[in-house]
Image (cartoon, rainbow, N blue to C red):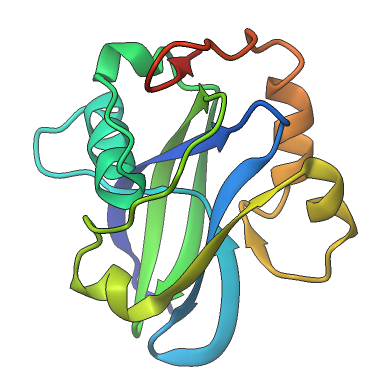
Length: 164
């Protein structure tokens, strides 16, 4: 019987003016051959709301600073179970959609585990994801993007981007 560690997380679908989503490349340190792409975001600190956590993680992982209010409401929620570094997690997570005209990613805020297990980043179009043999999370990311992007407002041309 697998024992799961409960975890709450907030993740961000950061989408540029070309409709591409930012993903980081990484691996599980307990299984270095298990490589995958993932959205910015991570575990919530004690007492932190999902919007607060998403804003904090976005700043730490990309350098983009937005207030929790600018993120708006989550566009998707799910619960996943996964191993990382030898621990099994059951993670309740909420996804926020943020549209930007463009963004130069700054990973200076990565913590030690992120520095050790993240190997790069890339902007992906939904079509590229759907055609790719690469592993990415969430597993239905192209479908999720197709559901949330048509309803999203166009990106703001102001500094820092716009949240939907």
